Length: 312
Image (cartoon, rainbow, N blue to C red; front, side, top):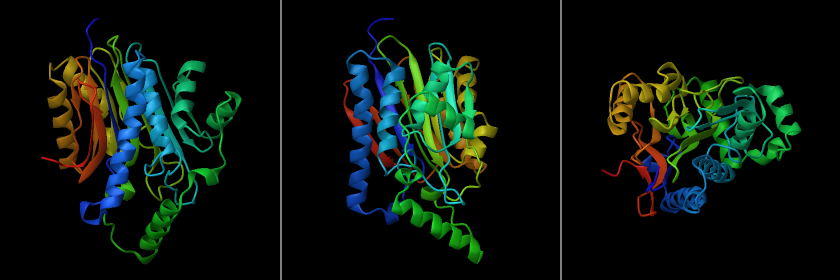
């Protein structure tokens, strides 16, 4: 394929701070972080790199930024521990790798990529995944490195709410934190990657949609690359990534309709969240049904755009 303009998009989760609570300086910090993390992947594409390397670079940058719920800044489980999930998928081959329930690798997305490139498996979890990461030479960090005071405070507030039997306020900032990236490179190949700390005070052992291929992460050169964020149980039950692929592949739908309709359908039955997607033609789609979704994308001229709330 020739004359393809590479594009990339990312999300920092549908778990945005409610607009009424967002202070201007914090909003500016989010926009700066989104721009910097997208630039990391866009630079890879602009120098002729692969979509796989581009999404890896952007997600690594997001994992380093404590504003986002992945890597450093990941939320705590109800046991005050970290259990992180990640996945990556190559649209050219459908090769993929994922890890779940792990704390240790500085970059969970690199752990997922190592599973894809160094094993015959797709998904590793728990202690076995950690031992594999150590043997693979990935940079490992102590648990304290991942924790931040805002995440610890959020855990204590949620545990106190439960202790007092107060109603769940469904605050998206506590429930829907994930990061991800999708890209199309100049060779026409697609890729997707997703990484998350999960939900604040989640039950230990809980796994959401992020590392589930076909749910929170998907890529196929014939259709689209997709990374989702939201109430993972719904995204798993609706096999969101694969469902969008099927609507495009067999239903002949354009990406915007397939992804937009599905996100709207999920919203009607309680599945709050959103996703980012790019198709084989470079069309970018970023639908969400929640109050907001941290997001960034490049346009055909290579300019970077960022958003948090519904700007329409």
